[in-house]
Length: 80
Length: 115
Image (cartoon, rainbow over all chains, first blue to last red; front, side, top):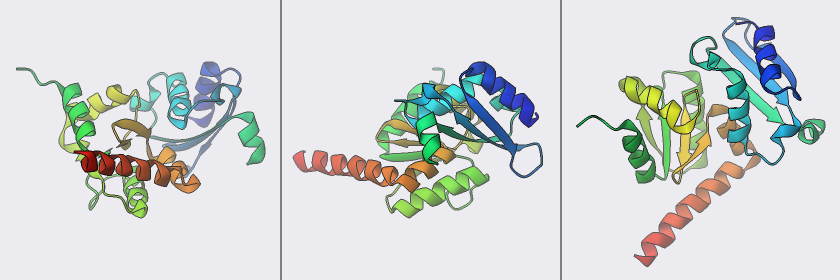
C-alpha cells in the first residue's frame, strides 16, 4: 500500500482529521501516521487508535505490515 | 469439548497483573515491536508475564478480536487492555505507565494484606 492510499482511507473514516502518513524506511512496509482530529478529545489512546484502525477497514490484517500511530487533538498538536 | 479461546484469554489476563501477548519471548522476541514493548516493560522494574502467540495460531487471531485491536504486541494491566507498542512507549515517556503499574501492584498488595 502507498502512503497516499493509507491517508485517503484514514481521511474517509475521519473526515475532520488532518492526516500525514510517511513511509518510515522507504520499504513500502513500515508506515507512520500522524492523525490530528477534534474527535480524539476526551478519548484514551486505545480508543483513538481504534478509530484510526477502523478507518483502515481491515487493511491492517494483510495489506499493511506495520503502522505506527500518533493521534492528537488539535490542541495537543499545537503544543507539539 | 471445543476450545473456548476467549475464556482462556480472559483467564490469562485475570491471572496476571501485567501480561503481554507478543511474537516470541522476552529473551527472544521475534518482532521489533514486541522487542521494544518488552524493553519498556523491563525499564519499569515491575514483573510481567507473556504469551507467545507464534506458538498458538488460533490465539493469535482471537486476541485481535478480544481487544478489537489488529496488531501484536498487546499489553494488559490489571485485567484491562492498555495498548500496543506505540501506546506503551507514549505512556512510559509521560510517566503514566509507571503510575498505572504502581497502582495495579499496590491494589494486589492491599488485597493480599486483607486476606
